[in-house]
Length: 381
Ligand code: PMP
Ligand code: GLN
Image 1 (tube, helix red, strand yellow):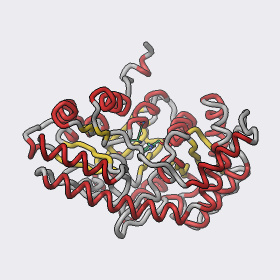
Image 2 (cartoon, rainbow, N blue to C red):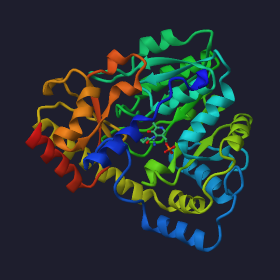
Image 3 (cartoon, helix red, strand yellow):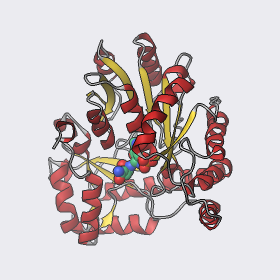
């Protein structure tokens, strides 16, 4: 196979979800909720299919959805994007990320990303021939290593890929950390790609502050998000990118040859969800915070000490108290021992040692499922 795909294997999510099905385990691995998004959104998609919106939509996405995306950015963050020229609808955030990376990264260019990184970053950077440079948000406290970030930026750096709220750690970058990122980006004239798919899944007093809101940042930032997490519709794969027209034109040029267009009947449904779903999302956030605390309590009861996330629907534990020093071994044994599936952190690192003892647990599941998972862990671990 080609060198650029030499290291690509089936994703950990596919492997672990298949293992969950095969062993009848509770799947706290792959991040998807076990309840669906708002009824009015689901009804809108059904209606769109009935109304015949089943052929290729416009490549940039239907106008009402582009407008809804722009209105959402203005309403929540005071950011102004022109829906005609500065918004692109994509097949999930995954496609937006790949298209942005392919659009701006030449072979040999360095892309700095927060390590552990979401698995598609490594693959997309590799497809582009770029070189990824990890900057640690490492355990046990999972704070951004700001010195390492500063030191990582060099003459070959082309782009910063910033994910906050951060998968898998649940870190929400602070204002001070974001400010450092903006200073580096401006000083070194970098492109910044922001993965904001968990923008609304934040807890306690956490705030999501898009990097594009800082002076000097909008013009260099491609903001990426998705309906999958916000509206519990991960299978619909409707995402988007927002950036100044010069940048979005390049991302669009790549997108057209990756998928051409994205899911027609889902687009009006997501437009409605963005326009009318703020209260629903507020409810989801509150519910998830309760689930976070529920799972944390359960994990503590089996002797683990979870790192409480301020965002996302993932929680991390160090599994050494349970007699394992390797998260992969722990996660391979867990379905057979306890009938539960989780995700080892190591797959998100280049620096494998840094991630060795950590395991990620998803809590976007009904309370009964979380309780059953905890009961199984208590009985059998
Ligand atoms: N980025 C991060 C950090 C994610 O966790 C995910 C998983 N949803 C994605 C991107 C991909 O999002 P989508 O399903 O919309 O492609
Ligand atoms: N984003 C989800 C996760 O991190 C699912 C990703 C996937 O299946 N590719 O678990």
